[in-house]
Amino acid sequence: MKYLMLVCTDPDHTPGENDGAPDVEDWVAEMDGKGIRLIGDRVRPASDATTVRVRNREVLLTDGPYAETKDHIAGFDVLECADLDEAIEVASRHPMAWNGLIELRPFWPL
Image (tube, rainbow, N blue to C red; front, side, top):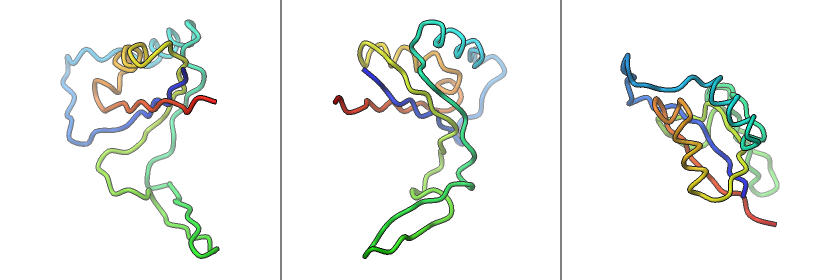
């Protein structure tokens, strides 16, 4: 099953010197090597976002993210996992699970 893993910041978290967060390059190499991570990348900050809506056949654009939230999406990965348990295990090993937060969303099956 495919999962979209949204990698988000957490402005309320202050990382400690010895929080034990793994290195992101090690995580990427391991997940790529296992064929779990299909694609992933960082994204520009929320201040660079553009929200697109169509209302009454008119395209409406808003600078910035649509939702007012403290945490922002910093990147994403698409995972291929056997089930949610495996996706949670993979996400829990990502450095941003230690210093930010990870949101997992399953793809709709075809």
